[in-house]
Amino acid sequence: MRHNKAINHLGRKSGHRKALLANMASSLILKKRITTTVAKAKALKSYVEPLITKSKEDTTHSRRVVFSYLKDKYAVTELFRVISPKIASRPGGYTRVLHTGFRKGDAAEMALIELVDFNEAALASTTKKATEAKKTTRRSRSKKAESKTEAPAVEASPVETPAEQTAENNDAPEMETPKSE
Image (tube, rainbow, N blue to C red; front, side):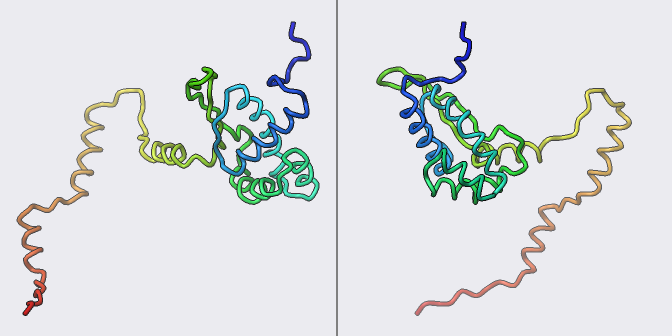
């Protein structure tokens, strides 16, 4: 049975493990995304998320507590000044672990761990999907209702014919090109 075996020791003594997680957490905070093994990424997630929650309250005490874990004043400054305001409304789940495949040398399973609110590509795609989403219903509508909604839309958008467009372009004054001598 696995009673009282909640912590993954990562094959290291406690001092080595604490230093490893502190260094990885500092790197994650400063770089916003790091690549590591899956086991280390999962251990780092449970290590760094309480620190990010602690950073929501910017007091001297919370800064000292976070510094006692990270041991890097630049990472603490970045956490409290940049990351904390961005994640203030999020109720947890600040990191994301993405499996990337296997390492070539020893076939260790690799993962990418990143801060959720700092992945611009994912944020752009979610906002794009939200704006493009149509309001649809699962029930069918009568054909009369569809024709009524489509007809005003056609009348509301006037379309210019190509003849009108060329006439507008011809009315514009032509610019004289300077002659080179």
